[in-house]
Image (tube, rainbow, N blue to C red; front, side, top):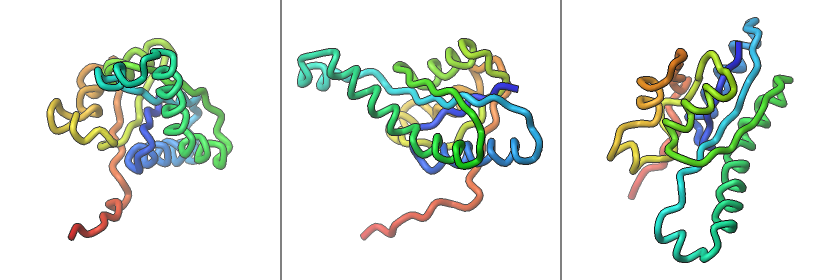
Amino acid sequence: MKLLLPVDGSEFSLEAVRFAIRLVADGLRADVVLANVQEPANLYELIVAHNPEVIEQVSADAGMHALRSAQALLEAAGIAYESEVAQGDPAHTIVDIVERFGCQMVIMGARGQSGLRRALMGSVSNEVLHACPVPVLIAQPQSPPEVEPQE
């Protein structure tokens, strides 16, 4: 089975990676694709950067940075993986990655770093759940992440 693990660097997405690792440890034979989707540059970023190549490089670097923790978890578990950093609307791009890599399941976190987007348009996981042609498993955290008290 080929699993897609979309990660954004958040603890919620890493919990999905940990869940996939537990499945493999319990005997699931799986190939893993790690993916990070960077949203396109906004108008301000385009104006300030002056050079589209700079924006592309910053986006690619941010995507690779977001994958590092998930890669470390998989490497520590001895699980081979492929990586993909893409750019576009997160939900639609995740569905595209599923189709391009021939994934048979998506395992993703319930919440990520895109709080404003979630508030305005609904969560990425919800969009993927409804648009994806393969099963989507939404991994809930084992225990709630610690939140610092606000003053």
